[in-house]
Length: 313
Ligand code: Q46
Ligand code: ZN
Ligand code: ZN
Figure: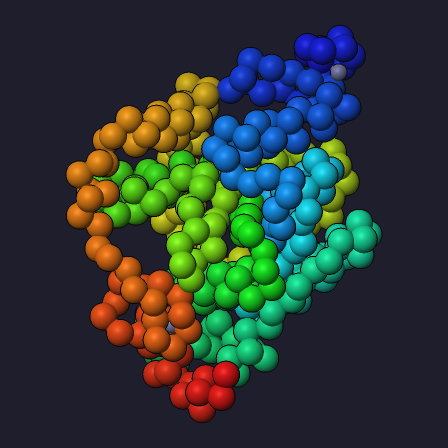
């Protein structure tokens, strides 16, 4: 297999695009694709300040790398969740995020959940649900809250996350299984900002997970190989496996699935739902928008479990 551009030996073969590229041209192709999404969906401009949420994994570190190569004003945010599970997951991912920042002379902001709220994610889950559920719903809620708060408090224009096409297609698949209208309405490369809510963007949403893996490896980015231990056996991994089987038989199916969804929504598939969407108001405690009658779900949860440390904030 030869590189389509220079004819040298190809390093990456993308059946989904009927395209093979050598290392040099692949490392140009990925940032060019990312820039294309940034422009196409109007995610942000060179005048804006971008905060990238980094987990220490290949996608978020590669996103940070790509955005700084493209000349954007970008800093990182690492949230230490306090997840150990025998593999020191949080410790190792924080080490790699800090190493990347130091090597590239980039600024990384670190928020430690234990320090901020007095307990780690597993501990908070234990307290709120007595261990009956996995920490993911609690973790997701807290991460969204912290990311939004830091983006606003530090004066960033936009929060960028490293979700790739496989992530987005799996979420879309889950949402279409139940036709979850409200979620389908909000899913996409950009969630515009509201009063109290920072703009959120996903510049890698058109890039396959294996394309991001190839990018991280060819760029020599050191990332955490282990997935979060709590993600094992999750429905999203199951959906990804199903979609991979489809993709294997029909290369490009995942991309078509996601892009046709975006197109269908743009041309009015969810217009009725948009009209009846519930009004949001600002949570009296933290000031972030919520559809709950009083306090937002984050503040309600935190008040229940750690009233002391929380009321001091
Ligand atoms: S970090 Fe948190 Fe994920 Fe781990 S506990 Fe679940 S939500 S799986 S992206
Ligand atoms: Zn080439
Ligand atoms: Zn709140």
